[in-house]
View 1 (cartoon, one colour):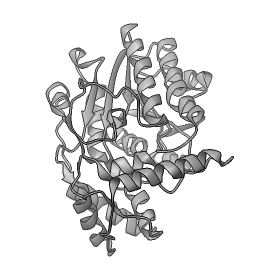
View 2 (cartoon, helix red, strand yellow; view 1 turned 90 degrees about the horizontal axis):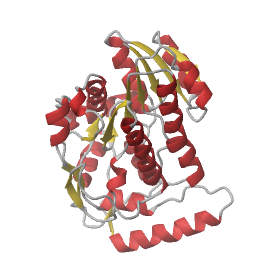
View 3 (cartoon, helix red, strand yellow; view 1 turned 60 degrees about the vertical axis):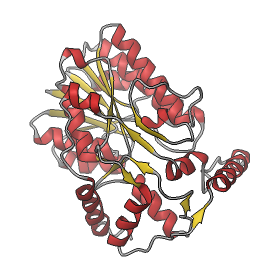
Length: 331
């Protein structure tokens, strides 16, 4: 199959194009990080530099393509709404327009379970559960708007399918564990709340498996969104303590009350909005919620309709990250 992968220079996108190449697919990759371009071309994969926000660019590189896997997007707990809207909504609109123009058979769209966040514990969340009346941040808001664009395209006749993968870990992770390791190094990491919150994490290799299943999903599975996790919830702070120990680090086990951390984050956000540079504050309310509240997802729908089965355990995915992190000399 000839497949266009957007966001191929990112953590998930890069792992995905490697897997597709190994399966014999012809892959066209695009992404925002030019430093990754040569690495991708070295794999024998065509790389086209450009932005998915440019509709003409996407239409041009997707000619003759049978499917698009859209992993590109701006993911961050902080930033200007206009930047998130351009990357997540307008970028998705460009991809949809290219699919229609070039008569591409299927669009696989990567969304996020951040649309479920309500600053409270939520466990066993199903795709059909009610969404918050107000989303937690600009990222969640614009990813939901992108989902709406994909649903509209499905109603207009395009084959679409969406996944909502939770907290990816593994070799190449530049987001979840690296953020926490930087906070630890700077002395900013504390256990927020009681430290008993349960969360779902997902091995990136399992998300890659889910995306490949979406490429071949039967007609009755189309037009839907699917939660993707490892299906093995863990207590977040116990998981982090174990991971840090395997890195030769000692997790600071002092606690910060949730309400105090939330109030501090709100004050830091208010100060950051007054900064012309709009730099991310040391702590955001969204981050406080992610570190203190339980969030687990129900993946029964993905198991039943896609045949999804997590193959790599969290233990193995963490070991994979630790080996990669040490080899990269990032410590």
